[in-house]
Image 1 (cartoon, rainbow, N blue to C red):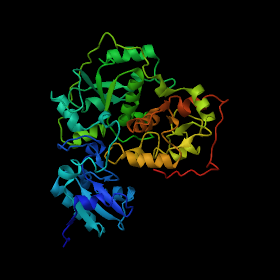
Image 2 (cartoon, rainbow, N blue to C red):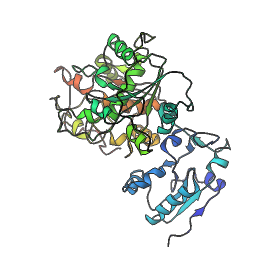
Image 3 (cartoon, one colour):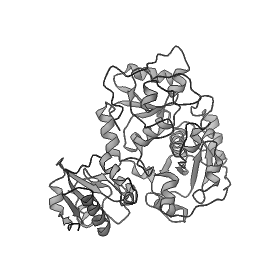
Image 4 (cartoon, rainbow, N blue to C red):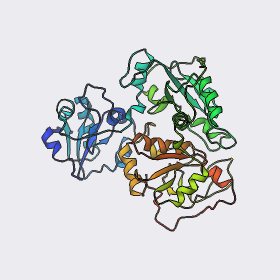
Length: 437
């Protein structure tokens, strides 16, 4: 028989915040953890130092794998808190049956912790740019979701040359956008300003339109001629980056993409929604040119002690075992770039996402980066092969509020196409931890 779960008080919880032997577990949805106030809490965010293990994840057979990935070990003392008393107790008992002997429940997060401004809480700086399916459902239904003050919005289902991904099910009211509208297939860089202007106007997007981007993960296969066609979730963040670069003031990304929508059991549409073009974007493109770095500036960054090129590729790509793409022949890496492992290959971002495709806990990404010399004090330009993975890593840093972050748009594709550019292969002489994430 599972033992009764011990309950601890607010005072007791406040006294263990900085104890490394204690692990505080927040089981609320990832979006609440990030900062959204969905249950009338007085303050948004989470208890200082808490790890996020949403109750939803208990439905996954590999729940314990995520627990261990977060370095929550049986020798730790566990405190579980959330919105719902029954859910708190269920998760606490799950820990006990998984071999954790010291487990407590905290039931006063809303009525005591969030109401006392002295008790420390943390949140993602730009959490409002990462929205939940419930937030989007409110908007789609004609309601007024929190932190939205506009009278025009466009929901965009992003894909790469795969309209079937859209036509086989999408969020009601969403239009589709091929990533080719915003990036040129000869370089895979963002299109020139005049072409971006035409594309955005064709899709009904002005600089003042709230745009909600999302994609659909469809299990990319490297043996497919176009693996990116199944990686719409990464493509959506690539598009979000280009929209922000162009000058769309309010760009949101649906956290977890299409899967998070269907996980909630919300209605799926099969209607091919017509686009509603606008006559004028309303601003000179680009409004935020500093978000993109091209090769000459990337070379300057490599020479500067105040900046870093950050390689968001897989370990086999980084050491030159593979190029990562069926259309790129050269293998290797840019000398001097800092490695920030994406995961398995060019079409996955496992090290930056949870297994439900939501964005990974930002404290974890922050700690991994800073331990490898990737710090907010420097100007950082993230890159990969052609821009998708670099854009997603950039989005993580931008959400955290890091002040000088860009995407090196050319990436390995452009760099390696010039034989005059230096490159390296093999394991670097210095310490590089390819299992860093």
